[in-house]
Image (tube, rainbow, N blue to C red; front, side, top):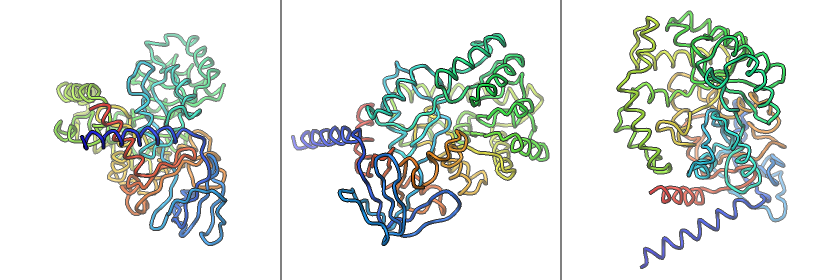
Length: 440
């Protein structure tokens, strides 16, 4: 009986906090905190940051800021306040998913206050409305249109029509997906430039990386770089320079590709603690997919058909070199974890992705840029988010340690603020337990 009573009390607390978080935000003050502004590599010690509604209202030395009456005070002593991070390669479930509300919550609860949903469906318009109206907890959602491929779009005329339709419908980005003819591809990119909508995605083999760079297509998964460079260091450096000169962004999805390439054991993947936060059938599906990847050796065979005899671990090493070359060339990098996808759990996988980028040799601050200010630059919304500054959207993470010293500190979180809603660590844990209990 006492155990049942405790569970009942917990559920009531979760319900109450769940309802409270969708109310209009008030005034919150982070006092005596170290700010990681992300405008450049620096720290601002002993600051007070005041949030009013969904905007940062004031930042200044702790002894110079007068707190507004009725402000909720959050003690920032010994803690670090940085911008919320962005998941730039997510897959938002469709309307028929039983987990869409929980997946949106997972992003927000882990500090992913912005996402770019790379699997476009019309339902995302309704989902974005529900998030913006505070009906459900979730990140700011940038929508990618339903993908273009040779299967969905067969002629240049159809491609041009769809680009205009998707732009008028309010999608933020177009997605390229193989297979695709050169004629259809050029119709998409040319019309997209005419109407002013961004485009990103895979690099179809029929198009090739060089032409994708010429067309200024932003690229997912480092598509085409291994094939185009054949692993040659000089060719990698040349492609990285061309990428920077074209102003192309790359969302590399480094960590999940180690899984896709079959370089991780099934036991290692199944032990990931964050799997408890997604539905069991989803995890079982991932197990079948990874077994199939390993069995078929799909990517190894694809490379062999091009005369490249690289093992999966060779491909992983080549991808690391390519990512580092892109950074050294000054090409734009975006944080993306391809979640939810084979063992890439929404929000949690961003911690793994950031570590993978650092392990590839990308400096910690550059990885933080890929997670914060670079996504804002990609969307042309530097005035809205990506740094801690007055007037910006109040998407913030309060950390227990300095992220400039150790990228893992980004996910040692004392709390998250999502568009002005403050979620302290205790409430986050209650919400996560509620999600885990649903899938258990």
